[in-house]
Amino acid sequence: MDPTTRLANEAWEALFRAQATLSLEFERADVWGDLPPREYGVLYALAGLPEGLRISELVDDALLTQTGVSRMVARLEGRGLVERRADPDDARACRIVLTPEGRTVQRRVGAAHARHVATAMTRALSERQLRTLRELTLALTAAAPTPRSLRSTR
Image (cartoon, rainbow, N blue to C red; front, side, top):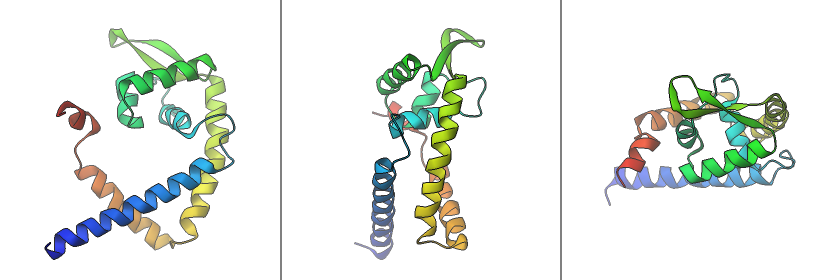
């Protein structure tokens, strides 16, 4: 294996293990209440978007299947955290928006989760390293195919 291929694979493995380890720590944290982390992810995606998102846009954001997102939205809707509204641009579609209760839950859980993330990230990384990590991961994301394009090639 050539040195660049080896280094790229070692870097990927380190990034993957760090993400998986931190994700497990965050999932086990006592900040979620009765809201699973993936459901919080949907509330987070909708936060700050008064016009909401279509299910297809949530699929791209949540990195889940259309069926998985649809079921999750139905659960969140049943709990009064989101609601469906007519899409003004497409009469066949609807937009998912946070309810006032959903906004309250997202802010409460989000604040606790943000504190936990900050603690986990700063116990090993300096501010300079955090900036570098952010720049590197944003560059990787920007250069990658979109989730939608990856689905269409299968």
